[in-house]
View (spheres, rainbow, N blue to C red):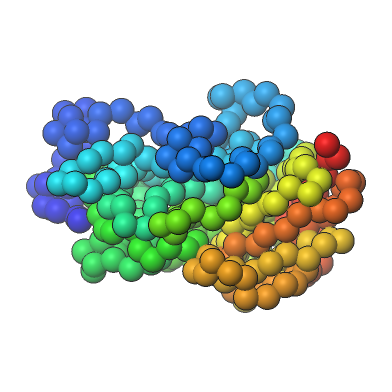
Length: 333
């Protein structure tokens, strides 16, 4: 819903009073570490997840290890007998370090690239309250099923706000991104994120994580000079992701690389089961490599039989060598 109060010609800058009128004062974000088990109690044995090294809270928004397993379930409300999941998103500007010599000016959702991974259950009502503090016109366009007024293609000017409200449907892996022209530039600057809608009956417990592939055009030549998983080139190569041997891993993988027609995702020394667009509860195929166009996304499930370190990366060497490379460190119990 983009209404006159938030978006008309008489609109004024966002302030605390407007937050209070909307009943949404504050910008707290619900973390994933406890939310999933709290909202989705499981009778089966929970997934085993290795302890993570301590992360400085001041650096959490730009730390790919912190983003990996971070799911935002919003603030849960009950209105007229329905669950409302309310999310608060602020567009702003920041800087990310691509390597020791290159900084990149980003446009962000909630001061992070990628934006927060929003999560709901099919049948919930989703309400996204969006404030644009980014200096340019921005918007939030969601993939999925929703009315035209929630489609997020209308630009929201700096200092103004909009509310997008729709039913969480269908279950699967979706995404959101800025849809203000030129869309490629807004996505390439960092304005994108994932939306997961869980099925009514939860999937089996697994070590769940999000991997979003993206590129950086640092010299405005419509070509990417750097690539990354979850925002920072080569991060998971330098800091392998620890997982347990024989533990089911569920990857939510999204390709947000602009300027390249497609990218693949390849897993070393293993096969994964593919749930295309997360729209099924049974896998469609097994593979160790999958091709994904821009904005294409899937659920990939696997478990490692043997301990050790194993690569994952696109099988386009130029993309992998320019930063889209990582390692799983499989730990024996």
